Length: 395
Image 1 (tube, one colour):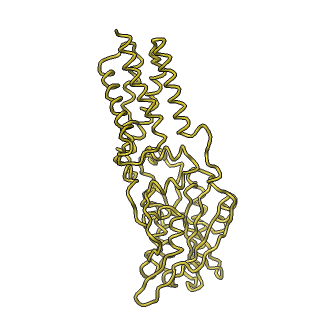
Image 2 (cartoon, helix red, strand yellow; image 1 turned 180 degrees about the vertical axis):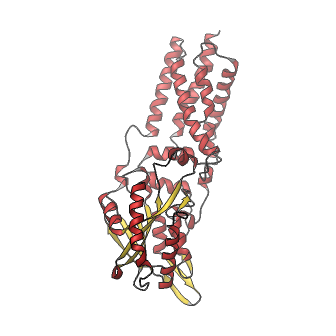
Image 3 (cartoon, rainbow, N blue to C red; image 1 turned 45 degrees about the vertical axis):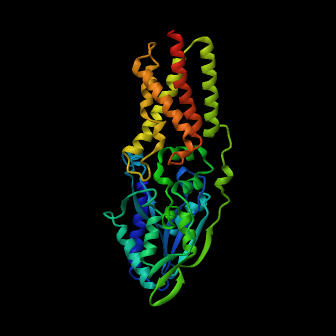
């Protein structure tokens, strides 16, 4: 990644002298939207970039605010904590075109209707942002990313006030994310576990534009309002510059491994173990220890993101009522033949809490993923069975 960036940076330095000599009247500034595709996890949301083109003077470059260095020390930890630094990079349009054409992407270009002076200001601002001391920024998935930065630039240098003429629709961050992750039920489930009820608040049109397709559609209907000039559309023309046959929805996962189906397989297994154990008067300590330990370890990640990370919309998170680190306590307790009083109290508390959670499901002020129910039932069965079998064996 670093080597690639320096190649692009050297390329930009070779182009830089042309920037200050070009004719801004014959220059085009356009927004490039890479449509969602199924190549990698991060490609399902799509991508956005800015293109500066002047064919008469041989200038054609793409500015990208979505560049990151995966080789940076502690990248995964910092990403989970919400402290990932992205940076602005620049590349020749030919490299951009080849990369996305070879990666089965569809790319749409929207040419902006702005004045020569506004084009010059955008280019000079990008030129300043590409400097080593300015190019990095603290990435925020919703409020400050590779889409919101180009949007802010267009709003600032459009020559007036940018008016989004689309009708307001009641939606939330969670629903918009679900639109992107629908073909991937495990990803949807995982994201629903770590984002809290802040993602369920109704948002305005501008807040939808953290997603590339939403910004693209908004600009299609947007216009510039200026006291001295008649209102005009911000997009003068648009076209598909790369077309792909990739369709993420065609890969919709209907297999047994979806979280709901796997969860109910686990419920059936827990019921079979409980019935067989009751008949045989067995506790199946190892089985239940693994069950609670697995949920407890997953709960460590959910609790870390909710309580420590700086990611938006992660606190408060009502999933912490059932998936939390405290489940490690009964997991360890199962390793001992004797059931200590505090372990018994833990199972009583957990049984009551999970019963309340299931009974009050529709009143919870957060949209919990339906796939949570079978996993909650597994824990509910585990705690209930532990209380009953201990009582039976201790008679």
